[in-house]
Length: 264
Image (tube, rainbow, N blue to C red; front, side, top):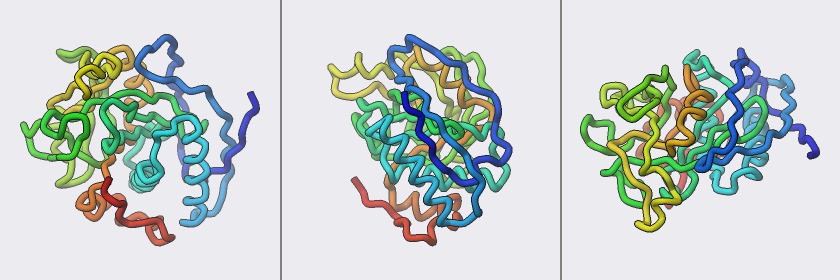
């Protein structure tokens, strides 16, 4: 396989997490993508440079997962840069994107290795039962709402819970998802998150607000993203995009990218 070289901004190089997630095989529900070489070169810390690098990275990732939307990736990238500058990230090598604008029967969770420029996982993920059926459309930060919360999270430690291995998620956007720990919002495995099994009913099973993934993929995903990586739950909500300080305060906005994306 011919290796591709992609230039990305120097900010990715800042204290990158050096641990590598374990390679796993025979995970039925998750899609593992072949690695592609990524050449990282130092460059000026400017908005134009950051956009150029991120668009190059997106183009490469999109060849691995056609369903990865540009607007979801670019929003995730901007928030990642903000969290990086704030010193919030320990595991800087990976970034997780959950795109709730897609059908629950789509593989709408993407785990990206930013250092190597490859997609580690692309699999199913459930939304909260009160957020919608096939599509998530309602979101809440309130306890016991049984709805998903949008925005940026920083992963914490894993633990063994009632549903097996789970990963705590710290919502870092005040008023948007900062009740995540109080609500017990975690990434965990669930039988109802098996997309193939749920196609008969027309939508994926739903959680109490947690991003639940296929059981077979849970342990490997958690090991790849635990201990301080960025997770972004996306939906083209005008209210969220106008409220998120991690997006509003990022200078990438000043270079022509749309501040608000259209509703689906």
